Image (tube, rainbow, N blue to C red; front, side, top):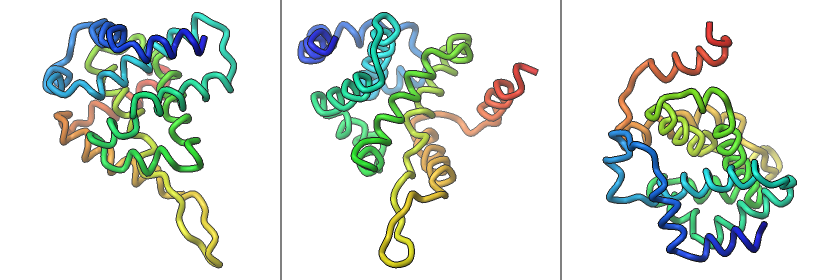
Length: 187
């Protein structure tokens, strides 16, 4: 599997084909079309998710694939250009947070809620997953020791809200209502 995926990632022509396999674009995606770097990442993660589903891949192989992908295509720098703070977050715990974010992204793609969402909701959900741990970092505690910042969910939410608004997502209660609907089993 790794040889096959590495060949695809190295071959820029095939990479461009992955980018062009897009469904109808939302207004926000069209706005970002001039700089499709983040869209490339979404397409690559979609591709990895499909490969994982098609082939019996173990957890260690998934983690290795994510790290290889990030290193081969400078994904960290690409995302950092759109999302300041991504590089710091992705290096947290030797890449464990990067792996976590990508695995959550893959889980999202396979969830029934995502599969039943509208195109605009899907695009929004991808961004939310990409940003959900942006504020995760180590903080110093007594005696020079460090620990994970327990406030990172709140910091990440504030950072994500600013970034989502800056790329064209409106401020609305609709996002809360979508999540609330999922949590209540559709009630």
